[in-house]
Image (cartoon, rainbow over all chains, first blue to last red; front, side, top):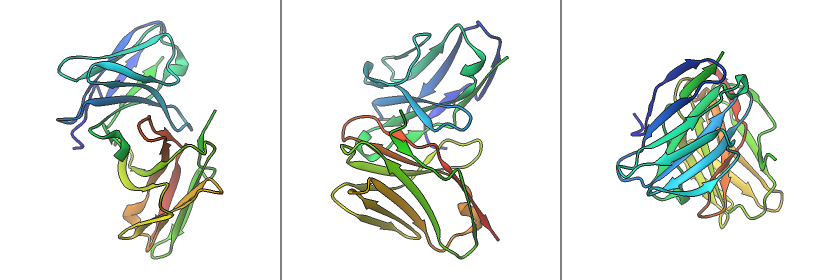
Length: 112
Length: 111
């Protein structure tokens, strides 16, 4: 157990729907990062939050949004889902991001 | 635009031999590099790091080499063990910003 908890582990939904992925960071970590891993792709950075505020944005679609709550857990909202959104979504947290992240085990999203 | 590239999707090595995983990057501003290891159904786990002020960092069987002029880093595993079979990701960042990851290399160590 890495200390980063992601729920749900698996999610199957239909095109056009909206889902919410949840992440609880490791205790004491203020930074949360979301990454997407599609087939044959590396980990694509989506967005970073630090202590409740958005810190950096990567290749995140406008249909996707995220937030970090006062208790530091984070949610990634994916709407108007398309088949191509099927992927593994990883959350990671860090105390000092200069020394790398701790990843959760991911949420596997399948859009049918 | 993929700023960190791992051009070998897979690698097979005999147990006891050396495994060499390669990674290239395009952004000369990157100054911190990591290797992560990922088993199926798990998230990536941190393996070893190197900063741009060094050209080598060693941790047990794992050594990372950095060639800044070539924008290239490599991970050496000696001796390779079957438990090392996993997907290995390299990652790079400019200090204080997010890490960019490569596409991964799947290592199979054959007993």
